[in-house]
Length: 277
Ligand code: FPP
Image (cartoon, rainbow, N blue to C red):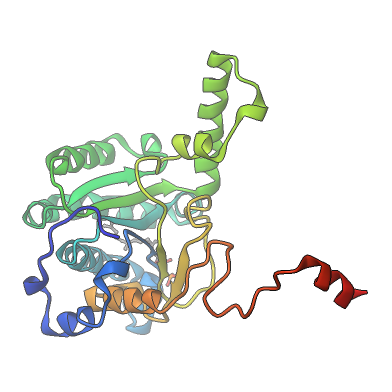
């Protein structure tokens, strides 16, 4: 259920509005996370350099964010740059992605304001170059009072390293408070994650067809519905976000419980024992 954000359905394209009309307003996700993949392949298919794929991918980031804000989605979390990208990609590509991030924030700040979008980040931000961190802080500060969609960019992010950071924080807290490990609860771990302030994603979208989680939000996606599309990220638009939400609404979420079509439940345990013997 939505908890924030003002609906601006009239700003959707006609195509988007047609898909939106098929959605059940009471079953809209609160938090959508996206693994944006396929920039390189999109460029390769067109015999273009990889960086042009990333550049086009940045346009998708803006357009998808704007659609999310129009339908009042409270939380949108995008995997923009992983720890592994940082360590394993050629320096030239990493430095291009950092320059692209800076220019993306600068160029799109006014659009973020117009769409009431608040920008935040998760990841080992402090390891990024000082000029990149400055621009990031500038965009976060400028949009801090916006009350619509919170766009969270995962940057220099890894799910396992997030857990390491969370466990370090929790261990330090326990040490300070002289608490024993038996007292640790799931809630304690949640409090120390980068995402402590937001609900877990209801829907995780991955573009470009790979069936992988790639170290993204590992703790948070325990009960998240996963939607994979063959479409490359630079071709992904607001309408595809709405299609993913429509697919999500056709799912039955069980959280480990029983679904509506689970059949008759055996009420007498004694009869089960007899049947099994
Ligand atoms: C995967 O494409 C995508 C990334 C490396 C991260 C996403 C980056 C962007 C969308 C660029 C702009 C982002 C912002 C926030 C300005 P890939 O290179 O792995 O594609 P491939 O698997 O086809 O090679």
